[in-house]
Length: 433
Image 1: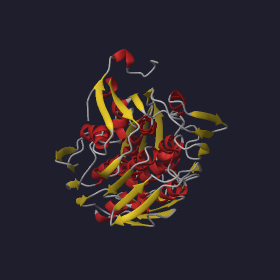
Image 2: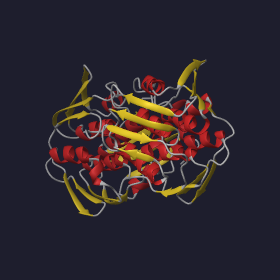
Image 3: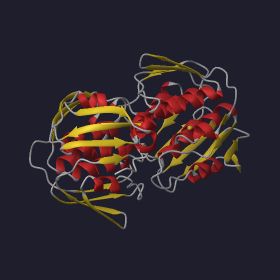
């Protein structure tokens, strides 16, 4: 990972089918919340094989700020929240990533209060935190807003029932962290079903928490007096795995993915197979992706888990853009998540966005200068550049670094011609032709 990623770009000489093997990293979207769980105990936590990403660095900076001892040993992360210095997460840190707002629940559990600034993150449409706030209030938490900061306080152990009007991954995790060690009994209805939620529940259970219903829409938490330390390995990254699968398909390649759990992204596999990609489970935790056969356009709609994931909607759009014919893409989770559309048009893709439905008239892509505006749009643009014969340049590398570890290096391991280089600051916005 590079500290000056805002002034860097990828140059990609596309048109070569990917081939070989790639090992999938552990899930960033799980690791962030497992890291926050370290606040619930004074004992040491060891997280194994944690991805080295800028989002992980952000959450670790926040934990250091509140007093957690943070140490890396190779790819393992050692955390110990023996002494907490502050129960406040300032704007300068929280503004960098929306997931950091979930520290509110962990600090509520540990300190009985927390002050957290309005979160930041990728700008592809509203992702309100009001569901988090309403959930805490329903459990007896007092919350006030002061100058863009949310101040939360509990005067007793939490108890009651949270009913989410729509499943929210961050909201579900926030409540779980708040209640695992500081509640009587809390029931979460319409809880998010994503495997990252289940991963948090599994780790907390190994720490001594009493949680039932993980993986279902109703989760029950019975608070315990204290949680213990644990050694734990996050689940594999289904979004990274899906991105590599789509890059393989877009380049008509053959790639084996190692250390991946096919059971947690079945909809992605189903949709790729529907489009003509051959996918086989070779052995435990390995998938063969073969896109050398005849491919066909299909329709995709991103929904809450176990549906097609919104984080793969943009990468899948790039793949569909390589297939002649008409495909459609919709996103019910984040209906405005289409920052990649204008950039794909620069690569010669015929796209029409009407009433939050993206029509893709696929065919040959052209090399272009492309700029990523968020993490998964970045993955989509890399896929487009890999598929387009000729030299493309992708800026916005700082977003890729948030979600994909050493992406260029690992793509080179699959035969891609990808290189990272510094660019002049006035070209870093990607507004050049």
